[in-house]
Structures are given as C-alpha cells and as structure tokens.
Length: 212
Image 1 (spheres, one colour):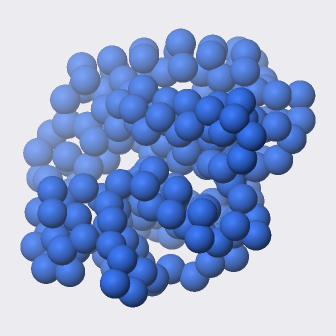
Image 2 (cartoon, rainbow, N blue to C red):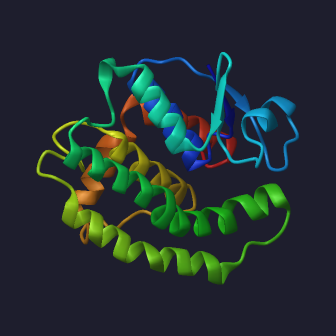
C-alpha cells in the first residue's frame, strides 16, 4: 500500500498514525506543493493530499482512506460499528478536518509554510485569527473529553487521531493550549502525542522543519 503526501499535513499524518495503530505498513511517497507525480495524480486527480493505492484500488481524501483501511483490516477497528459511537466518530473526524484544521492551518501556513517553503512572509493577522479561533475549539474539547481520556468510548478511535493531528501543526507554529485553562485537553494531547504512532512522526517533522 502506498500513501502519497507530506507527513506535516494533518490529513497525511492522520493516516500514518491510523495505520501504525492498526499494525499496517504503508509506503510513504513524499509529495510537495504543486507536485506533478503522475502516480499521485492518478489516485488524486484534484491533487488532494493524501492519495492512496492498494494494488488496483486508489482513492484520495483522508476520511475515505481511513474508512477503507478500517473496513478491510477490521481486527482492530478505529471506527465503531454501533450507530451512536460511529456517528460520534464521524462527527469528530469532520470537526478535526474542517473547524480545527482551519484554525491550526492558519497558524501553520503563515508561520511555517509561507516563510520556510514559499519564500514569502506569512500573514500575521491571519495567524493571529487562527490562534484566537482555537479558544472556543479548546473549550469545546475540554468539555467533551471522556472520563477515560478519549472522545468516544474508552479506547482510541479515529476521532482521537483526527482531533490530535491538527494540534501537532499548531504546536509546530508555536501554539500550545494553556494547561491551567484546559487541563483535560492538555493531558489528552500529551498522552496521544507521546504514543509511538504520533511521537515518531512528530520527531521527524520537527527535525525537517528546523524546530529541534
């Protein structure tokens, strides 16, 4: 199985972490901005990262890829089968991919991507707005994290992976939720980001980005 994308993308990271948690091996094919790799374009015609192939099957979009992997390799499911918890996981996955990524992405693009990889100064106002937008997001998560330390049920699911991934980008851009204001969220992110599935990629990303 091949995954096309850059691990600093929260969507690519989501699939890398999911695969690691399920004990699956993916070959990561690095893809950068504007990459014309024909194999990537074949599985992702609109250049949506990540792209994915498994033999003759190909698809793009992290949620579609996660659904495929969790359905085909069902020995350690990350998407519950029962209706209520499945719906909750779908919600948190969508929340992570849209509302959370929008706020974290504004900081990451303007403080990291634009100056380091595009060669243009970032928009400080856009980055500041992204940081301000994190406040209601963090408050919401502080309220909904379960007593067992997960978002859905008492075990790791796609919900946790999808929510924890954009926080890596926020941290790369210098944003960490205030521990006094959000103690549950702080503990939640710490226990997720120190899992080997996350920690190895975070270490590699920080080195690549020159963050130590």
